Image (cartoon, rainbow, N blue to C red; front, side, top):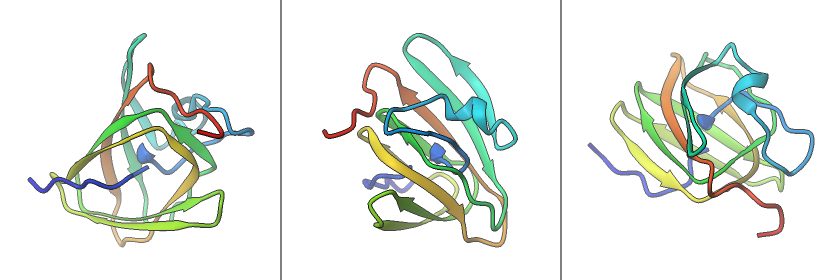
Amino acid sequence: MKKINQIFGITATAVAMLFITSAQAQSWHEMDAKTVKILADTTLVNAVEVTVLPGEKGSMHTHPAHFFYALSECHLIIHYSDGKEDKYDLKAGDYGFSNPERPHWTENVGKQPAKFLIVELKEHPYTAGK
């Protein structure tokens, strides 16, 4: 497996789908349930399986520190609220870790569904200004 040492976002992904109305993290997996399957939600972690269809765009959201694992080939662009973008071309089995992630939204620019696992660490939330 190839380790990806860059920030990924569902966005959980990181995910692709998700709403916030402020810079504080919200429960994005509940707000866009069509793309997110909750696997575990404990006091310590959120584990979700995310499926983003080709051309699908998520809503603005944040993540606490998290681990991601690509379950399929993924071609994603992460669009940050500050105008920056990161492109990810992942193969099934690629994985990585991210510190808390600033507001962003995810777009699947591939020709097939992007499917990945995100495990968020609730003890390390995103905090605006840090």
